[in-house]
Image 1 (spheres, rainbow, N blue to C red):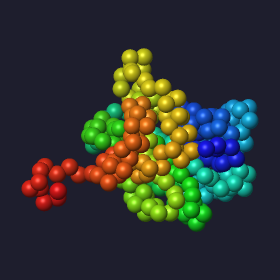
Image 2 (cartoon, one colour):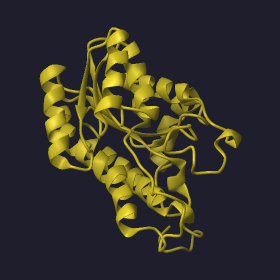
Image 3 (cartoon, rainbow, N blue to C red):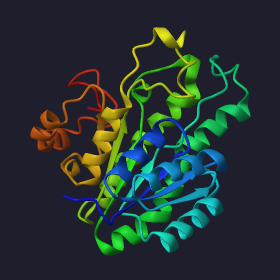
Image 4 (cartoon, rainbow, N blue to C red):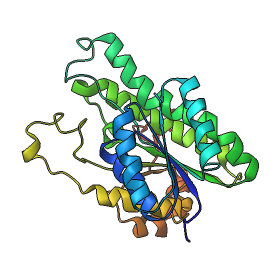
Length: 269
């Protein structure tokens, strides 16, 4: 499936993984709408998208502000058309590692607002048009940190766990509409945000962002639609193996956020 002529919207597109995703979609001849808070870095990404031969629009916006999201989306619609693919990549972490009660409360909450409110506001803005036309794809950039406790980075972990629940809640609501939502973790990719989270940067087992870009392109083409509503790991998963068991994954509730019962006698089983 060719992506030429389709439109993508990528948040956090000025640097790091968002920039790589935007450039990867531009290389597929998609028009790319670029959202981020820094005008200069967005302009640099836009210049590289244009150099690749793709149409591109840079729209500075904070994804946690509904009005800015709406204005950015209107610009993209006017300049490029209705988005076929939306990649909610913009994210942040708290300023430094600390126990939950030791983190600055505003810093903690701003992390949740960016990582959860941001994707929700994007979904709220783009899904009515997607549902009305019966097609569209929404991709949440998630994290394996959502799957287990991380006391030193609690805001980031909590926000990503909530994003997993948002993903499968949207998926249930979107069943039968022709619109697909997926959560994709890049694994440990070196960015401005991640390089100081786990110790000396040069000692970390960084994953190649190209694997995430390749997964995003496959999702944009519709190849991952049968994994609707689930969690996919770009660095660890064999996507073709997942697709071969997609029906079983979805019917069992695997790759979604679930409470584990302690056994058959558990009343919550």
